Length: 92
Image (cartoon, rainbow, N blue to C red; front, side, top):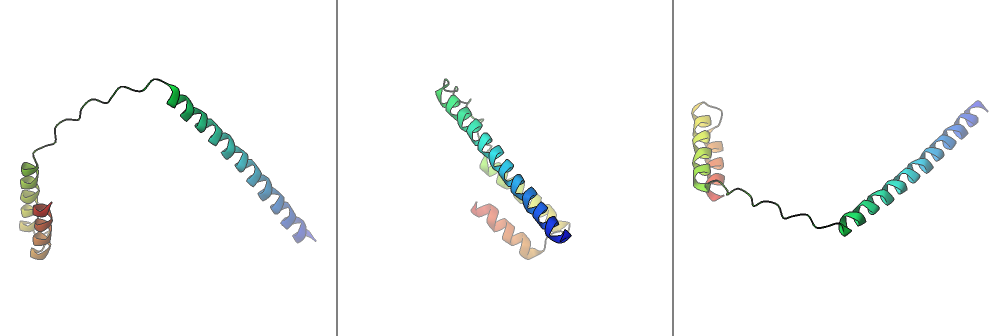
């Protein structure tokens, strides 16, 4: 009998936890839906400032190749790894 009481108690606690979790989730969904609706009705935000110009792609590739060459010379990369990475950089 103690086993059945323990199982019943566990089921009751788990059921209660599920109900509470469901209510919390429902409350949060309503809260966020209201915030989204409020944001949609608010004034539109000003456009973000233009992004800074992208760095020169050629200079970036040269830096990558230089670093790759240094890694090869120091023995970190094998010849095959070096060639594979070099091909990726040049194709990119």
